[in-house]
Image (cartoon, rainbow, N blue to C red; front, side, top):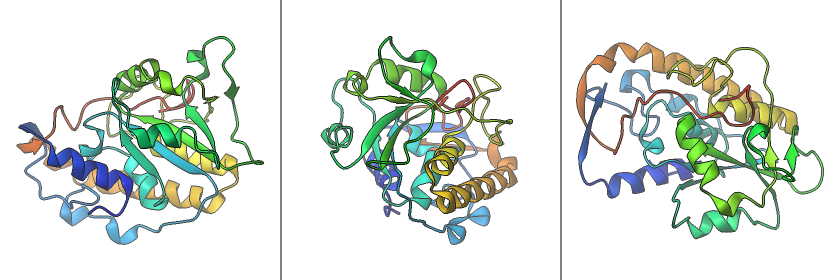
Length: 247
């Protein structure tokens, strides 16, 4: 259950849960790896790939608990993906170290409209020099915005603002605007533009399969049971990762 950073973060979050949470769909017996109903489990289809690019997920408190989370899909395909819980006052020292890693080009994936004057903003991933480390703020749009504005230790990093064409395929939560894409969709496009085409295609396929399996089990969501968490695992809207055309 803990073979990648997101699963380890989820296990840690479970270990410190102090009360159950009542949420829709939680009487369903779920695979504890992919969090889908057992009969819709997609673990057998996971195909890890190599990529020059690397990802670091900064996840809002309950995000690793949510079956609808797609940041986990990135870690499925790229097992060296980093994942840390967000804290305004006590950021994980390993996260701070990753944001200054000398072997990578760290950058925060977020809309350029939020950049302060003078901040470096990229509109395409770098294909030369050190490999990119894409730091993605994983939560609802309100949560991602909060993380962006209240994480001064990220202020020195350039921003990666990526535009995507066409509508999002993610329909598992209500989007903040029509121009938002889920975390996995943005990551797949970043990989493609960075030249990691096999990893990009594999992640995109994994996302579509995940979406199909998730929706196949959605009839169970009217049921309820206790889940250790602090907020609704089906909370609406995903983060807008890089531009007005993203998650």
